[in-house]
Image (cartoon, rainbow, N blue to C red; front, side, top):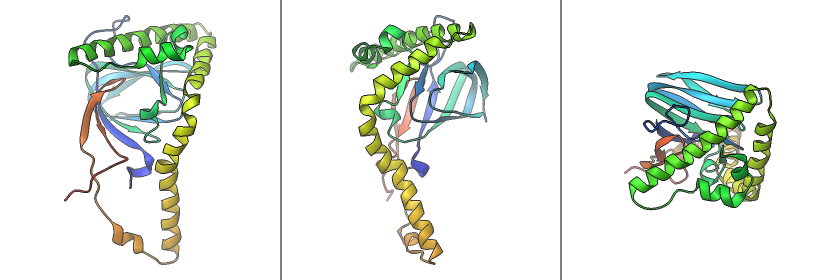
Length: 239
């Protein structure tokens, strides 16, 4: 059994230090093409900048804030001090498989090879990887500022063009994503349907298969900050 609802969960410490071109500290602006994402703020303060066809919006974040945003919502986490978030992600496995597209400038997003080169982090010493993370973030912020600036002037053309480029980038992956989705989300839905059918018959055999699952945290670099991610597809059974 994977994490409830075919979702994934991670803990996020939003990047601080090394301000961007606009003087703000935080993560890499991006969108998800197929998945809704939720933030549950557990510490610190900050804001969430979002951009969609309704324009640019900024939502304050503090301990207890819970927000979520649907596919196509460009989002940027901004850290005003110690921002810590529990992230709940729809469609476990898809974000890790490339569902996210960063807001690099249009000439990069329109070219799959240039996009891949800009998005991929190197292996190596932590200092080198951290520097690459900052370069990636700054390039995405550059594109984000261009998109949000155009939207503020009433021109959604660049945002719509970015959507088109994002779809073109992920389209080759969709067949593989469908398999991930079938195993995680659709599989859980079918299992619940079977349980409801059994309960309606008065059959509680599934209760005898009850078990605890656990997924230790794995530290890695994320788009918005340092992540403690959990492998929800392959949990362990505590002894």
